[in-house]
Image 1 (cartoon, rainbow, N blue to C red):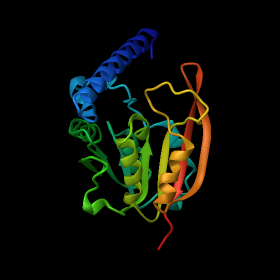
Image 2: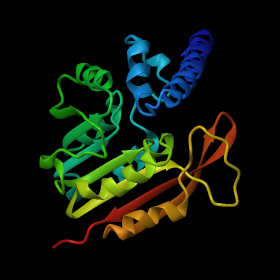
Image 3: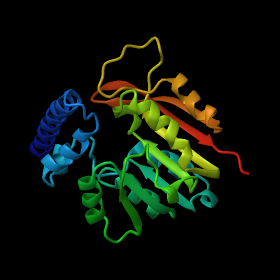
Image 4: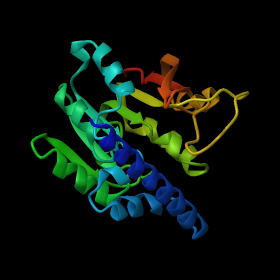
Length: 235
């Protein structure tokens, strides 16, 4: 990528971030704290550069975890939560999962389906705190990557209580996002996850398999992330 192309890409992303922030504030003030997601995708008018969280590649923190996954576990049904433009869902499908992907934004889901027409993915639009009956306890892997961190309470609390409902007996819930320890400063958005929030999943009967606490480079500065793997005991 040339320097000019990269500069233009960064300019558009910054424009998208400013617009998303304005939309978020406007919809919250109007009493519709989730409506800004659909508005953001609509206003982008097919330009992924104007969607701040659309990178057009699967997130490396997810890809790294999948590459470590034993081959025998790269099968079964997978759910991609908050699929956006579909790159994470596509990666799950490519390595062997039977994928269902959803987002609260119908525009995002339609956009994702057009980007990956040759992959067999069940694309759906619905609110994650209201699971369709056929998706409850249905998945061997539930992937939540960078979705919870953009939600605020009380909706975030509801989302965390709902996610375990998608996990089948013996299934895995994977959470990837920015992390923060209680003593660290908060400079949102996003709103990083804290370790105590994971207790919600334990209360729902899931067992913590591994919690990775690591940093990634964001424009020259280290940013803390958590990658947490939970398992529902087999019946």
